[in-house]
Image (cartoon, rainbow, N blue to C red; front, side, top):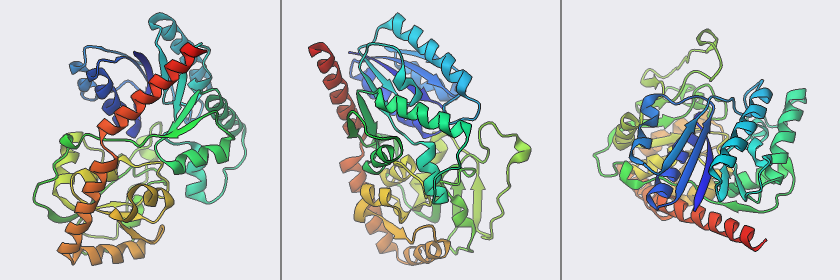
Length: 368
């Protein structure tokens, strides 16, 4: 089988892509990967060196959620059609909505990692103001979704949001994201500090909740501080009240892995999260999970996590004080999160489900 996959090099989609592509290639499946958003730095492309069957083509075409991206999207569609004509894949795995409407007689899957409308409603509590760009974006996403033979989302919550904002889908399926447990250290001695990972410029991550109170336990927040496309002078500097709070920028995987391994507690403050790779990575590192009380976290983690009242910084402080004071409770929640991650969110399970989806799509095409 030959899969042509598109990717977004900005954010967690790139991590998801690496995990899935590694599994596909090692399984003997031919993959042509085309990335958009920006050309990855050499360190971010090192993983491709061990995959001789991977045909990787990096581009810097802008992504559909970026402002002023219309011209780039047309150019990226033409480029992708050229690549498809050259390599002739069996299945298209598209991680951007816009390419769902591409002109090619090949079965296509569109994977929904997030979208502007559901982000806006989760952050602001209402739909976005109407504008020419928003009309264009909504139509672009709707066309891509409704042109897909299969729409995949990493949670039922996300799949439901797509139907709510963009209308009915031809076929929808939930495939949870997965990570390889071997990439994380679940057995290291834990230290008394709290870790949180998330883009600090993204209101959907709302890491500022951790800055609103003076916590007793040391806290480390890791994540990009600069929104792509904004000048450095436009960035707001964090103003934490907590004297024990350390705020870092984005870190490479090996540094983040070490932090996960050391942290006793992991906090996910997100008010918008279609899945959340960082809580999964923390769970595979045997951290106790403290999560914002939003539906998607309950769907994914159930009673394997400790929840604080939705978007409430004061209750978050209370929960952290409670959990920090009880090492036995910490370990219990850490073990529960670890076991749930192994049971539901391993990379091998994600791989098997995607291969099954590709096979079903290709078989239907042969019958047709």
